[in-house]
Amino acid sequence: MQATARARELDHVNAREVVSRLKGARRCGKGWVALCPAHDDHAPSLSINEGSEGRVLLKCLAGCSFSAVCTAVGVDPRSLGPDATTRPATKRLPRIIATYPYVDEDRKLLFETLRYDPKGFKQCRPNGRGGRLWNLANVRRVLYHLPDILLSDPSTRVFIVEGEKDVDKLTELGLVATTNACGAGKWRDEYNETLRRRHVVILPDNDETGRKHAAQVATSLLGIAASIKIVELPGLPLKGDVSDWLGLGNEIKELHALVDATSLFECVPDGHLNRTASYSEEEELQRLSALSPLEYDRERKDTAKALNCRPETLDKLVKALRPTHEGGLQGRGIDLGTIEPWPEPVNGAEVLNEVAEAISRYLALGPGEADVLAIWSAHAHAFEAFDFSPRLNFSSPEKGCGKTTGRDVVGLFVPRPLATENLSVAVLFRVIESQKPTLLADECDAWVNDNEELRGLINAGHRRGGQALRCEGESNEVRAFNVFGPAALCGIGSLPGTLSDRSIVIRLKRARPGELRQRFDSRHTEREQELARKLARFAGDNFTA
Image (cartoon, rainbow, N blue to C red):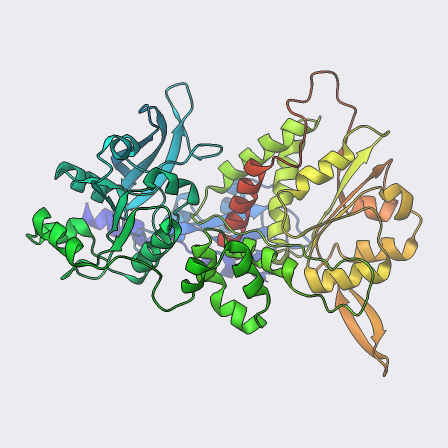
């Protein structure tokens, strides 16, 4: 048995051995290309790559089957499978070990936090049919054990901890305790009213994240709670919590003694969060807008946490308040913004399916076209990993077929969308060089088709290395401007030949009555924004895959 296993290991053929048997082989990215031995090949059409666990991946772009290529190379297809000598230990699949329900005042389930082993957490909500939806879109957020807080004596202390496990532990011991969903740094102002005129005790975990979270919660409750104390438990290990403290043999009476000996919280200790305790949000934003860029960068993350918003949101609010120094120029500066990637790894196939489903709600599309639009949107996030960026063309036979809607919907999923109905050659190459936008050009039949210089520039942007050369400055120094990047072109009729050849064409038609499942409303795109963040995470995790 052992001898057989050793023989199977020795029989494994790796990618380099396969390449050594091929003609015309050369490196291409992380793999190789070579002449395919299974047909009369004159230009390298065989792709060779290394997969997980030592697998050898062979793909003939001319259509030869895997088995035909293996036969021509002289290897057994089974020898290209996983290499037993390099196969990693099998990972344990996550399993749910605890479910923490978040309910409203009448104990109706709103959502749940699931705890997994290996350690991990996910939130979900009921779908109304006995199943779960894995998001909290449009769900009211409440504190854990909300009914217990509301039914308790107002003079009773309410302990705020960092995690549902700790809440359950303290509840078992007769205390009133709560926490917020999603962990440290996720406290919301909407939780505060539940604790109005209550005596709040915050027990932070023993790490910097826990202490910052305690400061954020305390600051948010100032002027609302009857009293606030932050009690740091003695003798905790790093990252330890109240459950660990009780596990060391400490008792509830000792906890109350610590609370009694702790001073009331009146302001945050010295640090950036200090200002938000005494400043209104408007005053704080005005103060930030007066800082130098370096000073602001040092404060933005901590202040965003204190204001319970994302740093990117704070950036936009502060930028809007900064004095402009544009020398009296007309118009406005361009801020294309950024998409904050989803905080957890995502399943790419699932995300692409969800994006395609979302797109198909708003457009009358043919078979597979929603999938194409989803894949093109993902490509826009990682176009710099490709040698080519195909143009996307929404082509309408007449007005009213949805080309502008198509542009606006796709614009929700791509990074740095630049929607325009007109621009010049000088603007195009400069904005691509400085902003790396996803160009979303509408009414192209009116201003692109007859402009040969503009068409040439858009054509050049189809290929990595495409550039425009211009003389700049008083010395007329020749400078190169990059024009490579994703672009969607929308118009009535077909694009000129050279542009059409470089385009994925979506031929729209007027929707029949009842064919569209939902009318597009740009004011309500929360679900699409979430999917855009997941696309950004998927592209970022797999950029070099």
